[in-house]
Length: 144
Ligand code: T46
Image (cartoon, rainbow, N blue to C red):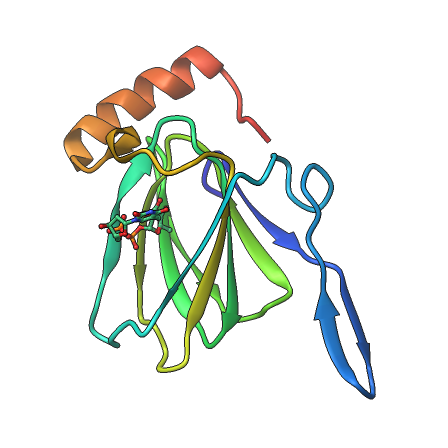
């Protein structure tokens, strides 16, 4: 997996009445949840994201439909398909992300560890790569 990312299986209770998934901070997700947002009504040709965050931690869950997420650290990139409401993609600091191939009914739910701060976004890919190299060298290991 890409550094500072992880696929997390979410608990699900299913019976003849349907299914229910619950997420608890610091248990199912490894951070305090400060913000929730969701992305929907995205055209099939649209590609979003194109940024990284310095400190933010997030859990992305495709609660309906499917979406591809490109994640990239200082060395490698990988594309993960999210197509289940019981599987989340954890993305920690210093990971570039792009979201694409949204199906018609996709709803991408995101739990975030911080409030929205526009200046916390790094949208320049070249600067991201330089900063990420320094960050991972200082860390010497992955956060999770
Ligand atoms: C991320 C990926 C997965 C707000 O005002 N508050 C918010 O909490 C968010 C997330 C966005 N916005 C505004 C800022 C922009 O004017 O909503 C507009 C669209 O946001 P953005 O272009 O950043 O959307 P994406 O899909 O490129 O990225 C979003 C998150 O911003 C980002 O943190 O990791 O989803």
